[in-house]
Image 1 (cartoon, rainbow, N blue to C red):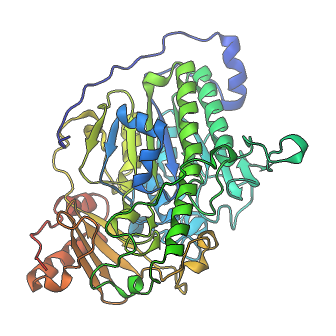
Image 2: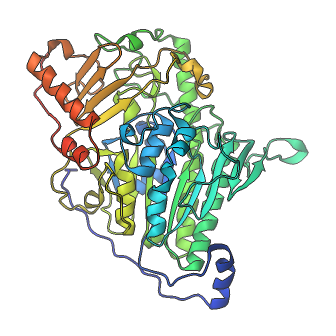
Image 3: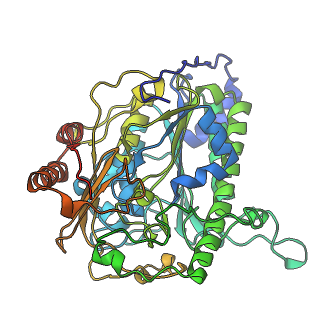
Length: 514
């Protein structure tokens, strides 16, 4: 469908029945005195982990959500690695502005977030100030709660259940300042239960469902963020889904196992694709899908709770991920790179007034999610926010001038040269070098990458070469190289409005032929 296609606007169904005072009083003991229900919509953000764009085709409830809303084909993570991207979701800033650059400290992860006091202003505090009840469930930031009390919670959240230890099973949550352990569930005779009530996605979903019910009883609009472990390594699917997707292979584009022409040294350093390595990539991909089936099931349960509480027609659901995943494309595994598989992630939004069954192709960024949530809830955003609201795109309205390009930026953690340093990535079929520091310009039809520490460059025409196999940089003229470099620098040094201006005026030149 065309970018400017308009869909119909769904009507808001407002709650009119008042609960008896006696029913509201128990909630007051937990949340404070309830206020009359406003016409503000509810918002649920589901944020998965390392989910590739192609995986959504295997998730039936996510597909149904897409049929009920808008899907974005060019939603990009501006720094494709967990913690920096998650801070961007929270604050609507490029990483060079919030300055949480890595998944580890110093300079990254939760300790850097806490050191900079970034929790003082996030989408949670914006929504809370706008009258919302807020709930967070799941993975907060890498290394949370390193360096602080185990009881520490960030500002802005009324209900808090964050993973402080563990992954899919045998994990500990900080539940409103109290450590709660969840061990593996057992069935008869001590065997593992087929449905583990202590599987992380199930636990997080249950807490979110309870918060929906409590908020409806309190007559308060709510904002919920559910950040799942899926589909991050180490991959531990829920028992009931472990036999699904037999025979499914990782995406087999023309780039699978193939290095681009004139590749940068870090790509060149990866070992070749063997049958054994491909089989391991495929096996892991099936496990990734199996972990995501728990998220898909959780989505269905949330929708059921919304219907039961009368909130379904007044709730926006946002489904997305922090970054993508390279499953053998360009002969690389992991994330971190500027290639499409690493930076393009699912984004699906449904809710009142949202077009139904529409695909939007304009570039949207993770910097936009916080401002969009705020706009939907009538909350104010600080002047330092880099992103912009995408509400006009949801409603099929003219957004005015839109970005022609975006910055992709990445910093390699100092002193760590391979994926092997990250314990969560040791299950990969092969280890290879990580990309060095880079800045990249991404448009709908072009990818340009500058590696600042090696002096290497990549340039791809995504219209004729969507899998980024032919590096055109050495065919570019001096004028073209200068234009691209200036475009990157304008974005790399931007703040707030100057980011939006630089995005709106990003170069979209004619590219050379090889």
